[in-house]
Image (cartoon, rainbow, N blue to C red):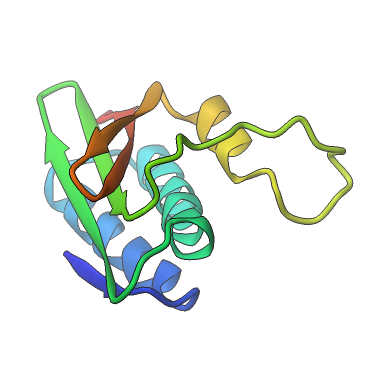
Length: 121
């Protein structure tokens, strides 16, 4: 899926990912996690990803887990910041780190792909 490089696109990404995860049979708790983590990685791609026009979202499913990925134009790896928990902002990748089964990033020709996995059930 392509979404515009706008902060408001986090909503589109959430809706798409939840709809698709539901079609794969994801549990309600998984749907909530997918919704939150998709919002975080899309927001990060818009804010820090040097995206010109659109962000690419992708989802893959195995019998055990879902993988959501977002591609942006910044080759720098995502950073899990050690910030004050009372501070607003800057905690997106910490949330991903804590709630995802696994997460990571891969370099691409034009930037990077950030991904996370969650259990299907």
